[in-house]
Image (tube, rainbow, N blue to C red; front, side, top):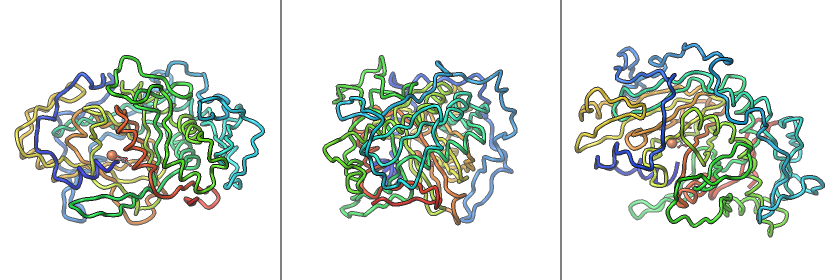
Length: 459
Ligand SMILES: O=C(O)CCC(=O)C(=O)O
Ligand SMILES: [Fe+2]
C-alpha cells in the first residue's frame, strides 16, 4: 500500500470511465492458463450471501469457489521452470558499494541477535552468507522448499469474472501445505521488518500515521526482473523505460533503511553502504523461486515483492486499490498468504458516469455491459475470501482500477500471525521511492524472535 492508495481510499474515487478498460501497448501479455476453471458469467448463488455483524450483505466466496477440485497430478501437470534442478542459492558473501563480491569467511561481525543461530534454516549443502555490517547470517532458502515451489501451482485456479470489472484467479492453494508452512515460517524468521510511520497532510491538517502491520519490501529496479539464480538483476529486454534515471540495473540504495540499520548498530562501519545489497540478496534468495513460478503460471513479469506481517487481529490494511500510476495500466498483482488465516474483503468502487465496456483478461465478456445498479450492488456487497496458507490470488485486468480490497481487523491473535507477499511490476523510479517510503521508511526495525515467538524491536 502507498500514500497514494490510501488517498484513493480516503478521496472519492475518480468518476471518469475513460481510464477504465482500455488496453494499452504497455499492458502485460497476460495469458490464461488453459486449465483455469472459469466462474465467469455465473451468478453468485444466493445461499452464499449473508449479512455480517453490521447488517451489510457479504458474499462468502468460500461457498462459491470449488475447494474440492482435484489437484493436478504432480507427475503429469507440474510446471517445471527453466533450469530446474540448478539450485537458486549459490555461495555468496555480499558486496561492497561498487558491487564487488566480498569474501565470505573471516568476518569479525558481532551479532546483536547472535543468540539466534539460523543455521538450521539453510541448505546444508551451502555455506551461509555473511556480511560484516549485517548482524544475521543470510540463509539460503532450503533446497526442498525451492524444489517444491518449482513444482507449483499445486491446484488449478478458479477464474472469478462474474461481477463487473472483476478479473481474478484464485489458487486454493498455490503451494502445498507443508511448503506453505515452511516457506511462511522462513520468511517471518529471516526477513527484517519495519513498522512504518509517516505524516499525511489532508485538507491542511497533518496526521501521524502508524502503519497497523509490519511491512518490508524488496525490489530490484524498475528496469529489471528477478533472475533464476537468485543473483542480482537482469535488465528486462524490449521494454523501454522512459526517463529512467538509473543507468545500470542494480539494487537501489535505501537511505531510510540504512539510517535505521546504522541507528540500531547493524552497521559497524558507516562508510560502507553495502547492507542494502545484502538485504537485496536475502530477499532475492527468499522470493525469486516464487516469483519465477508465478511468472510462469500467469504470464506476467514482476520486479517488486512487498511483504506484510499481520502479527495479531489488530493488524490490518484498510480498503484501498493498488492502481498507482507507476504500475502498468491494468496491473497484474499476485498475492500469496502464509501462516494464519485472515479474511480478505473486496468491493467495487462506487462509479457514477458512463457505462464502461468490460472484457476480462481471460477474454470473457461480462454477459451484458454492467448497469449502474449492478455496479452499485457490487459496491454495496463485499466479497469475502478466507485466505488460507498457500493461497494465491491474482488480481488483474480492470480489477485494481475498479475494486477496493482490505484485510479487516478481527478479534484475537489473527490466527497466530499471517504473512502476505504481493509480487508487482513497478515501471518508474517514483514507484521505487514510494515502495521504500511506505514499506521501509520511518519507524522501527523489527525481526522475529524464534525463541519468544514474537517480533523483537531493534530500535
Ligand atoms: O495482506 C493482503 O492479503 C493484502 C495486502 C495488500 O493489499 C497490499 O499490500 O497492498
Ligand atoms: Fe493491496
